[in-house]
Amino acid sequence: IYKGPTAQLDKSDADARLFRTRLSEGLKEKPDYAGEYVAVGWGCGAMCFSLTLISKRTGKILNVFGGETGEKLIDIRPNSLLLVSHGSVQINEKDIYAKKFYLLKNNQLKLVYYTPLPTGSEDDDNTLNP
Image 1 (cartoon, rainbow, N blue to C red):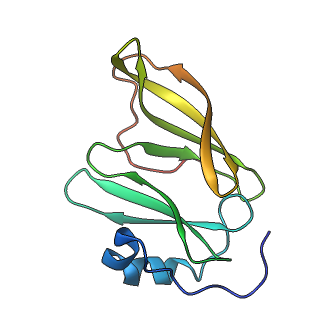
Image 2: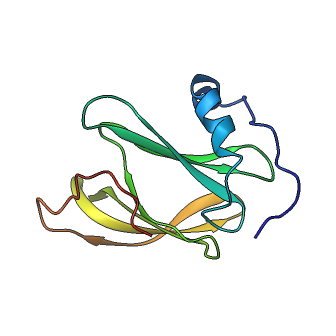
């Protein structure tokens, strides 16, 4: 788990500039994912929640999840490179709702596996389930 100095928020990303106050506050928390990333969330309207992962080491945003149509982050751990989400994948030119498994490699999330989910299986409480 990263214990060095916390970087300033990298504002080169448009989302970082737009949500700079919330993200800067989030950087003060302990890592939630892959030893150095903090999960920071904010409401974006009725029934809408966005969440991003920010590196305490670099101040850069890794990925943004949620929003009205975005992928939902389901599970992360401070000591793991695995990230689990729900979102759509293209199978035979059709969008299928699936549970998706990513691994962090070279500061990028790489989709390594997915499994289709039954229709109506989305969890609407917008919570992260570690």
